[in-house]
Length: 130
Image 1 (cartoon, rainbow, N blue to C red):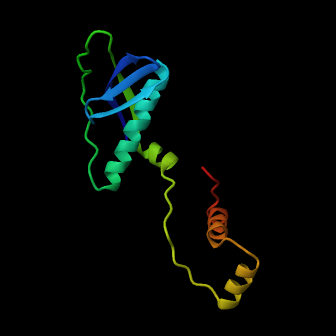
Image 2: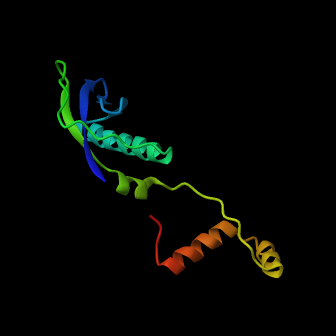
Image 3: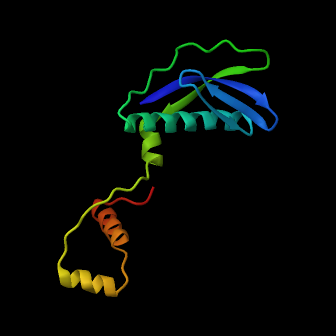
């Protein structure tokens, strides 16, 4: 789901501060481009966190906010689905069952069970690291 949220950019000592009025969040960037990118990142993180909590992501305003002198309004684009795929690296616990003799051999070999399972699943599914 791609959305464009209005943002307000304010020149600061070391770049720009950014305010996202629809979500009442702030961030900053070293340059104008960095500030807009940081706004997209902040919105993406905010959005997937809200989804994880069972909340809906509010639709963005369709108009740019009125700015004070020196401020600039723009849009920050975020694709929540792509953001989740790129940044959702949380881990989940899985309980597995294996034969005792295999467990003993793997432990004696110092194998990391989580790593071995991840590698096997990636190979079986034909995927690589993100």
